[in-house]
Length: 250
Length: 250
DNA sequence: TTCATTCTTTGATTTGGGTCAAGGTGGCAA
DNA sequence: TTGCCACCTTGACCCAAATCAAAGAATGAA
Image 1 (cartoon, chains in turn orange, yellow, blue, brown):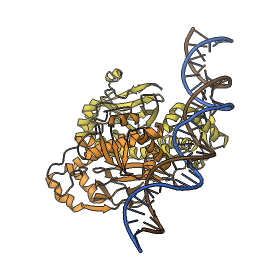
Image 2 (cartoon, each protein chain N blue to C red):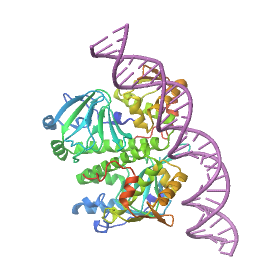
Image 3 (cartoon, rainbow over the protein chains, first blue to last red):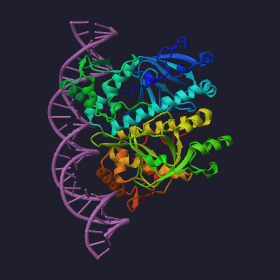
């Protein structure tokens, strides 16, 4: 379904030390941009649970995920929390031209980020149209994902929500290995039950109950709390109640 | 389905005729681009309730709203409907490089759109960096709005949802007149109760009840079904439970 | 004027998921 | 090996919003 990664310009050679999935910028690097990139680019790693940026903080970099998973969350004064972004390898955080982070950015697994100092990154963008184009494409993809997510939040049942999330994670995970999930599928959940609840607009108890129900109904089985085995991926997709299959193609 | 669009009358204008809020492209028009723009641009109007594009249809144009209000909606097989975009004057629809519409696009009031044939628009974009930059900026704004909307869908109560929607509409409406809403505010609802429900992830009955409740509590009053008077905008904003006030900048 | 249609309101009842509460599980530090 | 702590599960009960049902505007056509 979401073949975004597969359609992305392939990273072949040039970006020396850039991990293969870090295509946000590097996929478009031209040889003569590399030197400049190296001036503004640095790696930074975080542990599971660590907060990278608090909402409201000054944020003087943009970054893309190299490995691991991060989330963006909004929190109301009274503590109600909604996840609004789930970042896998190759995903981009931060907005050129913005001073302050509007969301909490949290590592939910151990995480490696490739960061770019904001000012030089903006200069680079101004000189290198590829980067802006790539960023537009990625932002439009994210907007599509956000809209799918809105359908989930507004109209799906708890069971459908859980199934949908498992499908999404399976797909993102599979795309890291350049495959499409099919038949029997297995992957690790990069989220706690609470984080799943924050993604889905549910409580953690409801998440737990519905995961148990899917297990009881033979749609998934768990090895430990986090490793998920899906015997029939198509059956799980049906539970997710997704309207458009395929779709997604530009 | 949208054959009418293909046969749309070509309107020859220069940017002087562009309504002031129709800034998506025109705000950045350079004099030497005008001739080209006129080749690809045409106006098209729709009546309230009309469907501009069905999800899945071929869509060979992009467009921006000149006047009126349109919505983007997703529909599940069983009919459950979630609005995923609410377009006011100056907002942009369509994705360069995409063949097929992923959402229903519906006029909820009488509507005037400024359309651009897709292929020439893409060519124009390739030659005119301003347009891509503007589009990136607008898309990032939309993504922020989508994330605020996700918080609403996932975590707000019915009452907070209604208050939030009224605040959003008041703000968009006020911005058309280049003001910020403050104190006593009045505006017309461009949506039916059902469309409000589809925005908020509620049923129309709940919308009706909660509007009545806000009325009973003196937070709003209605003249007819659609004209809303808010005696104290700040008090309404409090009901909306918004975390970040202001924000919105850069 | 009457009728039909579309939109809206309100009431009665049901229910899916939230809330509160109590245990279970597994990793790891001492 | 014990105890702690973070995470997860399950049960009992409750409530906000959905569902089902009916009737009240407003509009416009005949």
